[in-house]
Image (spheres, protein in one colour):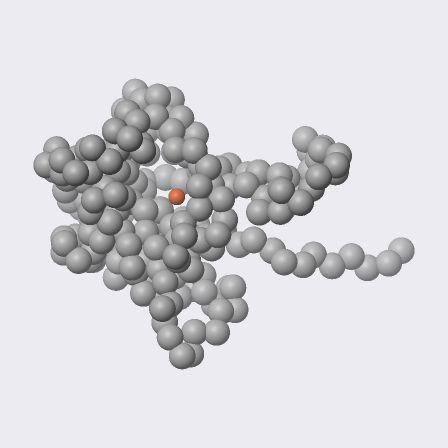
Length: 208
Ligand SMILES: [Fe+2]
């Protein structure tokens, strides 16, 4: 039998932001307080969310560089730095000439019944999400095989196919964890089936 190589992988990174649970709780408490405050005060964001994020609040269209506005979000950006480095190393990105820098950082508050349909993050290299509050049955993140539009007449995959061979995968993060992916990878957030708000912070790192 001949050899089979697995080429062109799609890497998804998931890790606790920091090792100390106390520090994570304190950071999340502060991020949550600020996120709720933005949702209350940010009228431009509320209008943008009404049109583009029905039922929820996101600061993507109004306050999308929170790392420059709030020391708490700036701190989050610093803490993410080491994860970005590790992920970039795994991807073998040659970053000797320029490094990846946080360019965008915004808040998402998703009440019961709200989801976020398939999208990717343009003008970015590495994107990700940090989870502030993840009520039970609310926290999934679904990734789609980036080659799906080329499959044409291909048969479906068996339900018991290995994770790497499935056409989409759902990742279930916990509060205090970050997930990183390459910005071209399409993803969506299934509807929040919990009664409590799901609160996350999305971000982009870029190298130009
Ligand atoms: Fe996203």
